[in-house]
Image 1 (cartoon, rainbow, N blue to C red):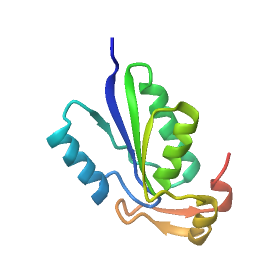
Image 2 (image 1 turned 45 degrees about the horizontal axis):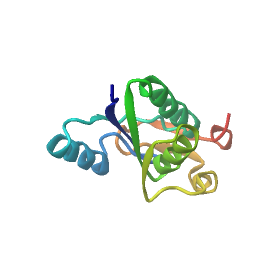
Image 3 (image 1 turned 90 degrees about the horizontal axis):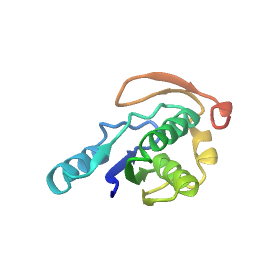
Image 4 (image 1 turned 180 degrees about the horizontal axis):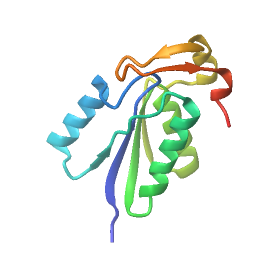
Length: 128
């Protein structure tokens, strides 16, 4: 029996599941591909926690769904990592190539412009 299609959209750093790109993806799938289950999680602000959530979503759905991943910016980096570990089709939108360097410009206090959540990004939040 074929697996049902699932598309996992991963937004970028300091972005949201309510971002413009996520909304465009949601509307496109609704109009043109209602057969695809679309999952657009609100990723945590911390990169390691975002990776762990993305991984848990793939683990949760991989047995019953054929999973495709779309990643934007830091979400593109995470999508590449998921593809390396799980395979599957992956689309990258302006992916972060070296986020461990890019995010050093954001160390310190941050506020997510979508959720208004404040948090402190530290160097040790990049790895386990």
